Image (tube, rainbow, N blue to C red; front, side, top):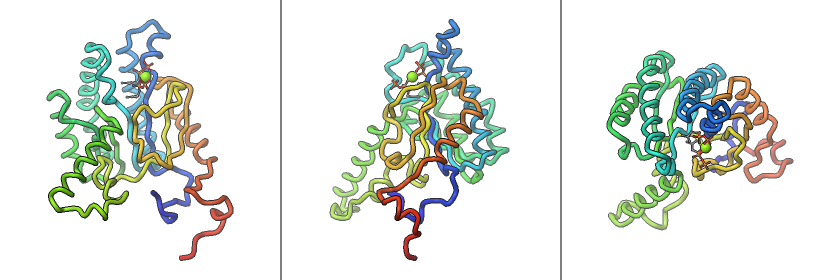
Length: 251
Ligand code: IPE
Ligand code: IPE
Ligand code: MG
């Protein structure tokens, strides 16, 4: 839960999360295979990362593959993974040049080796970069993340490392995969769907949510600016009254 002094004076979100939805529909509307939509979506992502860096956003988390996306046809899944591996190979040097630290949330261990290994290498290689954080949610589900954190807490309690009476939000948060990242201020979902689909459920407790009607391959820098403008108009209250927000809390 953000303390009042965590609220920034600026209207720019510190951490943006994007549910990159609609690649399949974008392709279907053009009588193209779904994978072509994913390919165009990957190109969009590369440019949006650059745009976020240029705009001064510190952290971007993108939902690339959900724990539930394993339900898709095997050819689509393998096509997506090959595309992801190719994108990383083609753009890692550029990310390094821009000082991007790459992180992954989700069950990376369950991913095929040809995806997992280069990602682990890239994560290690970029560990000390601080200019920008790109967090890829891959084989990620918020419920699965919460279950894993709860299990770790239970193990720590059973081993005597954690007093159950001291279990609080900080104790749970420290065991989430996003430990150390600021909570997302803004979540954007493209393609007109109004749901979170198991993305960052706890971390988004106070996030502003913006729904863009365009499919992800059409989400340009202008669309990003529109979402940021919408965010800047919102009044975040964190449980307080509008009047309280006008008066800074006593030091
Ligand atoms: C988002 O686009 C990419 C992934 C979920 C991997 P979709 O593939 O969900 O596209 P739609 O929603 O079917 O149009
Ligand atoms: C959410 O999109 C996951 C990603 C964008 C990777 P989905 O297309 O899988 O979500 P639902 O099934 O429409 O809720
Ligand atoms: Mg979808």
